[in-house]
Amino acid sequence: MKTVTINKASQTDLPSIAKLANDIWREHYTPIIGSEQVEYMLKKYQSVSAMAEQISDGTFYYSVLLDGTLVGYLSFYPKDGALFLSKIYVSSSLRGKGIGRQAMEFVIEQAKTMGFAKIQLTVNKYNSGSIEAYKRMGFKTVDEVVVDIGGGFVMDDYVMDLFLNEQK
Ligand SMILES: CC(C)(COP(=O)(O)OP(=O)(O)OC[C@H]1O[C@@H](n2cnc3c(N)ncnc32)[C@H](O)[C@@H]1OP(=O)(O)O)[C@@H](O)C(=O)NCCC(=O)NCCS
Image 1 (cartoon, rainbow, N blue to C red):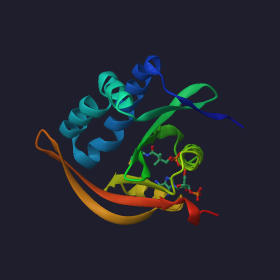
Image 2 (cartoon, rainbow, N blue to C red):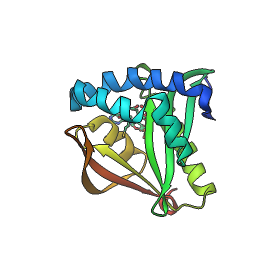
Image 3 (tube, rainbow, N blue to C red):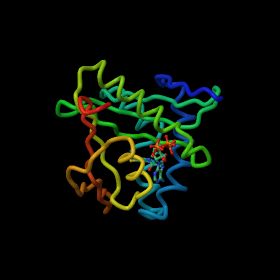
C-alpha cells in the first residue's frame, strides 16, 4: 500500500508544483477551454511568481506526495465564512485510486480546524469527470457563475458546496 502525504508548500516547492500544473492543465483543460486560455491561466495563476503572490495574500498551497513523489497539489483560502478550495489536482495516470479523496479528507480536517462549517469550490461546467468526483465526495451544486478573467476569457463555472455538519 502506497502512502499519501500532504505537505505545506514552501517557496522552494513552487517550481515543481508549477511544472506539474503545466502538465496537468495542458492535458486536462485543452479539450475543455482550448490551449490559448490554458496558457493564459497557467501564467496568471500557476506560475511560480503568481503562486508566491497568492501565498503572501493568504492562500495555502500543499503538495500531494505518493511515497515521496509529487503527484498532485491543492490550495485553499478563507472566503465569505467558508474555506474556498481553489485548486485540487492529481496526475492523470494516478486518478481514480483514492488520492483525491484522501486530499479532500485533508482539506475537510483543515476546514474544521480553522472553524469553517462549509467548503466551497468552483468547477468548469464541462469538467464532467471532476464534477462527478466532487458529487461522490458529498458536494452539491448550488449556483453557477461566469467570471471575466481578462485577456478575452471567462471562467464558466458551477459553484459547489460541502457542508461539514452533514458529513457522516
Ligand atoms: C478531481 C480529482 C482531483 C479527483 O482525484 P482522484 O484521485 O481521481 O479521486 P479519487 O480516486 O479519490 O475518487 C474520489 C471519488 O470520486 C469518484 N470519481 C473520481 N473520478 C471520477 C470520474 N472521472 N467520474 C466519476 N466519478 C469519479 C471516484 O469513484 C471516487 O468515488 P468513491 O470513493 O465513492 O468510489 C482528479 O480526478 C483530477 O485531478 N481531475 C482533473 C483535474 C481537475 O479537474 N481538478 C479539479 C479542478 S476544479
